[in-house]
Length: 329
Image 1 (cartoon, rainbow, N blue to C red):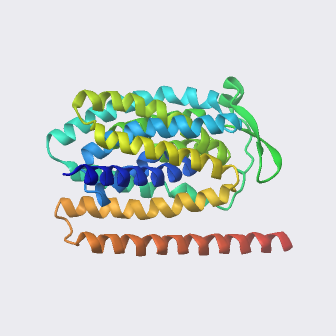
Image 2: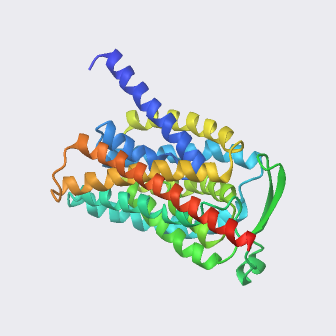
Image 3: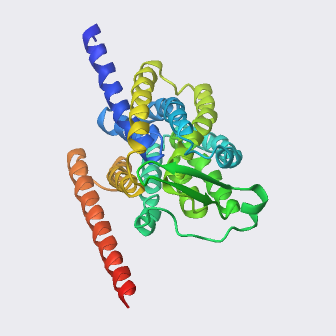
C-alpha cells in the first residue's frame, strides 16, 4: 500500500473517530459504543482489533469530555469514584471472558451480545424520555449515609438544579455488569452506566452522562491493560481513533451544555437503535442463523430504527395528552 493510501486510510479512521467521539460524549456512552460497530461493520476491521482500539479511544474520550464537564461542575466525581469499584472488578472478569470467546472462534457471540446490550439500554429512555429533570423521590438510607447529592447550573434552563441519588446498592450491581460488558466488548460501557445512574439512582440526565464520561476512562484503562497483554492493541488503528475520538469528545462537550436533556435522549435513542439492530443482524449472519446480505442488513437497520423512533414519538405524544387531560380534570 502506497504512503498516500495509508494516509487516506488513516484520515478515514480519524473521521470515524470524530463522529464516534461526538456521539459518545453527548450520550455518555463513550466513543467505543459507536466506534466498535463503525470499525467492524463499515471499515472491515476485525472486531477483536476494533475493540482493542475502542478501549484506548474510550480513555481519550473520557479525558477530553470529562475535563470540560468537570469545569462546568456537572459531573459528580464522588458518585463516579464510588461506583468505579464495581466496574473495574467487572472489567477484569469481562476481559478474561473475551479471551475465552476469541480463543474458541466464537466472535459472532460478541456481535449478538453487543446488539442486545445496545437495544436493552434503550428501555429506560422509552419510559423516562418525557422528563427534563427526574421525578422527585425521597432519599433512601444510602443517600443519607454516603451523602450522594449535588447541584449544577443548567445553562439551557437558566437555573440551579439540586438532586440526590437513591438505590446506591442497585447501581453498584448494575456497574459490576457494566464492567463485565466493558471487558467483553471493548467499550467504556457507558450505556449501562447511564442506566445505573439514570434509572437506578434517579439522577438528572446531564449529571448521568457527564459522570459516565468520567467513569468510562477508568473502566477502559482496566480492560485495555488486559487487551494489551493478549496482543489485541494495533497501533495504527489506535492512533487514528484516539485522535479522532479526542477531537469529537471536545466538540460533544461544547454541544451538550447548550442542549436539553430531552435532546440528548433523542440522539441517544436514534444512534443506539440503529447500531443495536445492525450488530445483532451481523452476529446472526456470522453464525449462519440468517442469510441476509450486508447491504440489506444496513437497510433493515435503518428502517427498524426509524420505526422505533416514530413509535417512541407517538408514545410520548400520547403520554403528554394523557397528562394534559389529567391536569384539566
